[in-house]
Every structure is written in structure tokens, then in C-alpha cells.
Length: 68
Image (cartoon, rainbow, N blue to C red; front, top):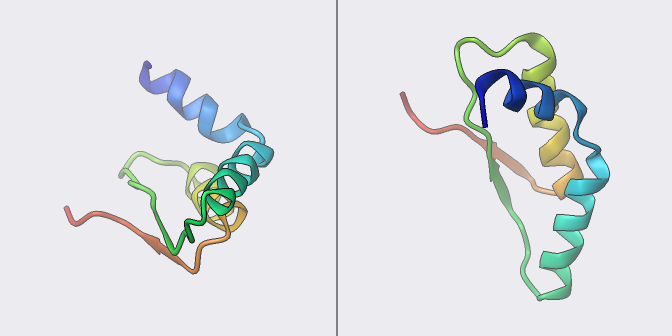
């Protein structure tokens, strides 16, 4: 996926997608605790905010980021 396409996906994907992912894990008996969102230096404010929204939709208690 090209960078611009990925950026648009982050900004427009429905949070219902992440609710569905959470529900599948829950049905399988798996508790999601953390979500890793690899922030980049060129993320705009909306992309940054969406990462937190994705984590909330997944129902996680912790959002992580890999070290640089």
C-alpha cells in the first residue's frame, strides 16, 4: 500500500472494523491488553489521534510504540 493510501486508510477506516476485531478475539477467549501503533515523524494530528481511537475501539488498556 502506498504511503498516501495508508494515510487515507488510517483517517477513514470505520472504528467498527476495530470493534469487529476485538469481538473476534473475545469470542476466541483472548483478552487484548495492548495495541502497538507505530507513530511516524510525518504523521499529522489526525493520524496520531486515530491511533488512540483504534486502541480504544479494541478495548486495550495500553498503547505502545516501538523504540526508534
